[in-house]
Amino acid sequence: MRSPTELRAGLVEMAESVKPVEGFEVGVWKRARRLRARRRFARTVAAAMCVAVAVTMFRLVGVGSTPHLTATPPDGPFLGWSAVGDVDTNLVREATDVWDRAKSAGPHTAVRPLVATRDRRLHSVVVLQGYDKKGAARLAFFTSDTSAGDALRLRTDRPAPDPVSTQVISLVSPRLTGPAGAASNDGWGTSAIAIAAPGVTTLRMSSTTIDQELIQDPGSETGRFVVQMFNLATTASTVTVTGFSKSTKILSKPRKVFTLPADGGADGDARAVRGAVIGRTDQQIVVALPADRSVQPGQLAVVAAGVVGRVTAVDQTGGEATIDLVTSPRFTSQAYTNISDVPGSVRGAGTKLVMEHIPPGEKMYVYQTNRVVVPDPSQQDRSIGAVTIGRASEDKADGADTVDLTPTADLAHLRDVSIMTPFDQG
Image (cartoon, rainbow, N blue to C red; front, side):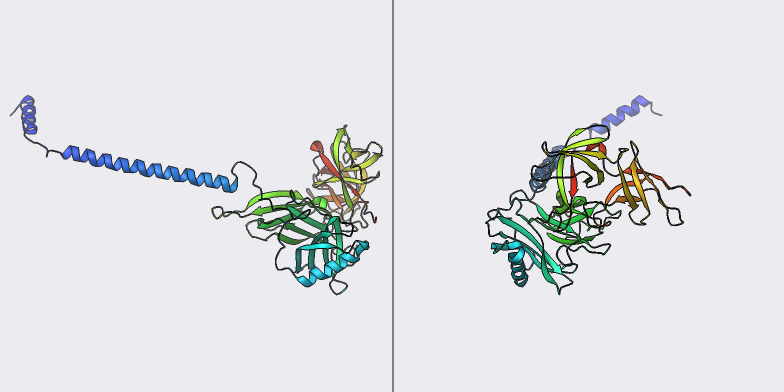
């Protein structure tokens, strides 16, 4: 038997006699190098394509910043937007005649429509721009009077908005279906109209006066024009308009391009006077008022989320108003629950609110998170424009006539408020 040393020597001898085909290793090495080169080239091309796509997407959707609509060139002092849908020339003619007769404002010139269409809810909606007889640029909303054979009625006549910065115009009111100035008695009789700039593919309107917001799915395109119904408590101060744009084929989900408060109401509706907060104590704020608008003690100050407080003093010379916050012990008001209509009153209690004087009875329940609203004294009706003041912090105990509330307005971070004033016939 051979020793390990002899076996190893024999194997070495056999290995030396085996010779690989010349060029075999070199061929394998060259082929591997070609494959690696091709892969590097493919990776380089793919990376370049990714960079190009990313740059293109950045340019299209504005990654890292809020997207904006492309500015539409103004039409002189008017919005340079194209009219929405098929413009009904008969409606334009009828609305212009109504406008010319209103308050001796006509004849109007250079009239151009933004909307002139039939609508399921309001029957007809017309929005016109034009010069009045004094040469002032104006914007007017018209809807049908369903009590008068769908004749058009002028609902509001405003100064034309800034044609450069405006992205959407809107109107929110319970006075859009009957005679001019007459409010609806339907619990869902407030209508909201919005028309957006070209480029918007979906409009969404939401209100803080209802617990389940009946809003459109942003993925479902509505176009630049919408009409939506809300409950009677809804006002422009509690409505937000959001616009979406589906501007590229790369992105299937629409992009949000603006979120703005609604513009205002119709003739007969309370008017909101905006005031900037310029001072604060423990349970009061002081706001600066516009020079051309006045407010009175007793009027409510609100934000979109609800009541902030009540005006207690006005310095007309200094253009300031002092407002007691809803948590102030000096604040009291009649109140009721939003859906179940349980009556009572509310008062401030330092850091919270208390709803009290709730009548006894098996239906006089107040449950945790129930919305409590207060009437707006600037409105002509208890239900119209009623404003949320708080939500129940807990269930009302059996036999109790009080329940604690949490204010819905963020009282700690107020920057500006709207003071609700009665409609001025002048």
